[in-house]
Length: 504
Image (cartoon, rainbow, N blue to C red; front, side):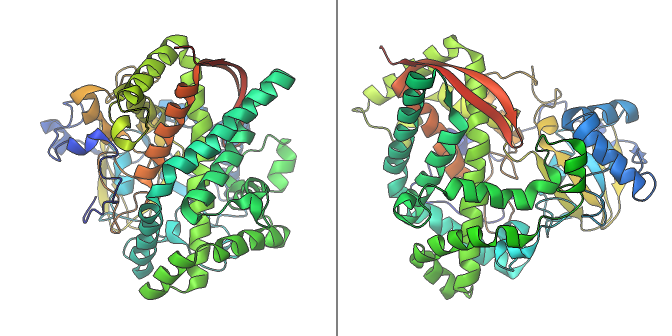
C-alpha cells in the first residue's frame, strides 16, 4: 500500500509499532496453502426488482433491522461474508445502489489496494453529495491517487499537520482543560454533563488554534463553528444517516432527496471566510503547487471540519464510552501508568513520554478497532478479479462497486480472540503490536504509512496522537468517572454523571 512513505517531522516516534517488520507473517487462519486454492463460487445474493429491491433494503437497513442486524442476517442467510445487496440511499438519490459486500478481515483489505480498485467519488458510497457543498470542487477525499491533484492536495495536508506540530500539545491542553472545567461546572449545578456538546466545542477550538493559530471565538464565527459544521455535514451524509425522526419524514426527506444547498449557503460562507483569512501560509503553498487558493481553501475546510473535527466528534465519545464501561479497575491502571510516566519525566507530557504508556496506547488502538470512526468503506473494481474470504473465492467484474462494513472486519473472530469484547491490553507487547496490521480505521492498516500514493488518512498519526492526549489529560486530572450512554446519528451520546478528582 505505502509506495512512498512520507513522515511528519516531530511525529516520527508517535507509536512503537514503527518497529514492526514489514515481513510479519499472518496467523495460520488467514494465510495457509489452502488459501491459494479456494473454490471460486458465485457471489450469493441479489438486488431484487428495480426501485423495489433498493427501497426494501433501505427500509431493512434503517428501520426494520438496523445496520448491524442488516448485515448479520444476510451473512446467516447466504452462509457467506461476501454477498450482493443494495446499499442506501438508493432511489431517488443514487442511480446504482448495487454493491458486493466484504465483511471479513481477509476480503475487506481489498478496498485499500489501489492497484486493484478505484477510489474516485466513492467516499460517501453509492452517491456523491452536491459539489456546491465544497465550492464546486471534488475535494481530496473524493480523488483517486492516480488523479494529478491528489498528490498536490495531500502534500498540502501533510504540511498543515507537520508545520504546526509545535502548537498541538499546548493548544490541546488549553482547549480540553476548558472542556473538563465545563463538565465539572455542569455536574455541580445540574448533576450531569453533556460530554458531546463540550467535546465539539473543544475539538473545533483546538483545531483552529493549533492549525491556524487563531481562536474562533474572536472571529465572526464566535462559538458557532461546531453547529455550522454539524449542519454542513448533515447535508452531505443525511442520505446514509438515521436522525431518529419518524420513518415517513426521513423517507420523504433525507433518504429520498438531497437537501438544497441554499439552506446552508450563508453558514458555509462564514466557514470559508474564516479559513481563507487564517490560512495564508497553506494557500500560498497550494498556489506554488498549481492549486488555486480557492480550491485549496475548500480542501482545508473539508480536511479540518469533515475529516478531523468529524473524527474527534465521533471517536472521542465512543472511546470514552468504552473506557467508562470498562470500570474503575482500568481507570486505576491507566491513572497509575500515566502519572508515573509523567512524574518520571519532570511533569511534562510529550510524545516520548506517551511512548512509556503501553496500556494507554493499547486502549486507543482497541477503541479504534472495536468502533472505528469511519465504518463504511467503498471502492470500484478496476478490472475483473478474484476476492477471497476465509472459506471461498469470488469473481468480481470490472466496474462493480465493493463495500465493506469495517466493524465486522475488525471484529473477525478468525483474527482476534474475544473479538466482540473491548480488551484494553489487546495491543500490548510484541504479539499485540503485530495485530495492529488488522486495525484499519484510517483507510489502511495501522502499521503502514500514509503517503501521496495511497488513500490512507493524511492525518492518521495526528488522530492517534490527540486520542492519546485525551486519555492522558483525563487521567492526570481524575481517578475515575461514571457515564450514561445513549445514541446519536453519529455515534455514542455521553452524559457524564460523576468525575472523581485525582487523589494519588
